[in-house]
Image (cartoon, rainbow, N blue to C red):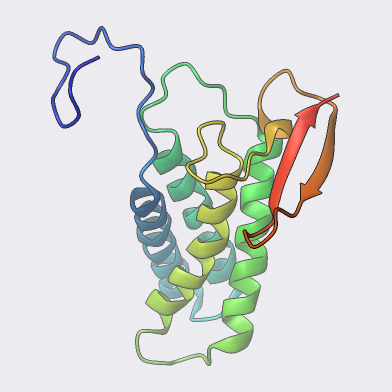
Length: 163
């Protein structure tokens, strides 16, 4: 394995690339703002087209950013629908909290929407960079049993294992 910080030019490394949390969040914010801006321009701020296009943009941006370096990984429909569902809930929250016509309201609503989409995209990824592993989203793992473990002063760790 090459030393940390060096480039593998021949592509012989078997190590999978790490997910950049900032890139996933940034991708979701960018696409939510771009799609949401188009929807707001067509139907107006806080309209149905603005709502759906912003949630769709955050979903597509999070999916694109979390899977950009994975050529062989299948992205399941259930995982995509869960990311979209969370983006819809986050968009509804943003529309309920933010007034229409607010300065930079589109950008703030895009950030709120992308928090939902990016968090679910990261937490359902097999190479999740945090200690929460949702193995139910991995291909071939249909049945799981969950258990929460409280380890003294550390925060709770949720582990899903195959039954």
